[in-house]
Image (cartoon, rainbow, N blue to C red; front, top):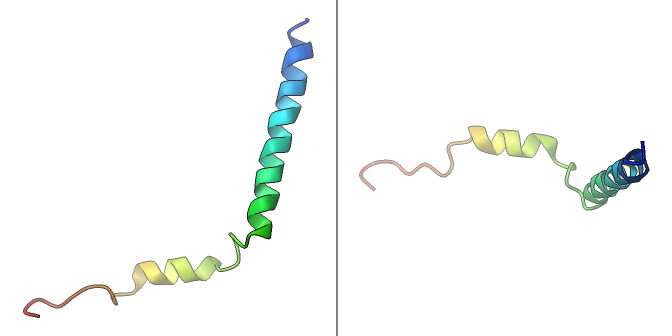
Length: 52
């Protein structure tokens, strides 16, 4: 039962760290352009033609 005195605060602290990391990623613009990466994967701009 005394292990709960250690595990509950540890779980709360790890949850808080995860929440702070998520909020930091929102603030830094990580999720601003969701469609841009998907479009870049499908584009052929970086493929060079043979014989060049």
